[in-house]
Length: 306
Length: 306
Image (tube, rainbow over all chains, first blue to last red):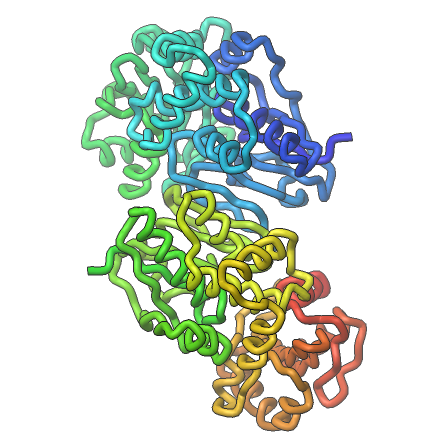
């Protein structure tokens, strides 16, 4: 029987999936609880690359938990991004690098640091608790840090992330640059996805003050390859706007090689993008130069201008 | 110029004051920031005993901070218990052992553990970061753990608190039992306080669902010594109930030697105490046997029955 459910956010990315595995392993090694990693949605291509590289299975899909179940959250703390009945769970621990929105009626273990990736924090937790970082664990950690920081080039990157990458590359015995670029490129392969799937791959519900929004980010090595689908993408976005009653849907098509993002913005509040970045949308789209981080370069500036 | 303000909650207790000093010292030793400890209210008798024992001054009183100031919160995370203009501050870190109520619009450093005392967490942070725990720092930490756990007898006590007390006693070169009892007794001396002061010494605003309440706790070595003031205490409580529009004022008079609490309960929702503990108030008061912890033995049971 599973005693503790460990999971990251919906629309799982590589940090969420690897952190679930790495955190569950840590719990078990420390003898804290019988912990098992789960996922709340489909694995993306980049994560698939990582798991295939290591020859390990994806965590099981978790659709609901019983009331009172013990859970550990990684890489998120917002109930909106978590399992649907989180309010009835007993949250034992949270390890995360996002802003704080969770409320609890009881004290719990929290480890948050404003670093680029949850795995950077987990790397410290292993060290602090004297748990050996195996080659496999190191590869999982390293992959997620490369993913979240776009090979340490994103403005979310901190000194701690750099230190972790250096250390983990050695344990994992991989060239971070070479492996990382291959991994990131694997994540940009959209060929097998429907429009609906592309629009939910890395979609986050974020309210910029009163502006109810979804910001979806898709990585690519070539923006034009994604823009050929612009009409279909817009149809899909408009459908979601209507269904969810959104004021804004931002699709960020992020060029991981040149570190820019083409944004497609739809909804009654699309003008907020123009105001926030001092740009003019043409046919609902514009290039945001140097913008690669939703957390650092979208959320604060959009919130400020909302 | 002060770069980082470090402070605990209003109505400061020994954990809040010592943790502010110990956290500021850690920040400075780690070279993270020029940090300085502050207090948000008057020092209680127990804390005075600790500071006198060490021959050190109380932190400066902090009445407000400038907008955008860098702050570190210890032993609390509720804006209601913090400095009034906290919403305009830049919270760098929070080290705490209470339930989670804070929200932020940015990622930050959080270290929460469900242990008996903030100092137990700080003791780990010193070790993890290789900062030496001096004799003075050890005495501050030890004193707070003894205070919060009532010499490791409160149900809030965890294994981590016990481990810390053992280790810190050695560094501080004190007999924890002997020093601790003397310290706790010093905290029960109410002779110099007015009724108004007694009622605000360790008062927390806590809403049990919709029941707007204040729960104040006063430690004593002899309940009857406090109960001789019952009429004056009730007058003072009724005045606060009216001024603050409270539904309930609970005064817990906690016998630190025998581990019981006499409660005086006033307000329209005083019946909630009878329901929660299955007792009958006589002249607004009753002995709650074995109850010493507001956090573990009052907040959950009162909330559940509200």
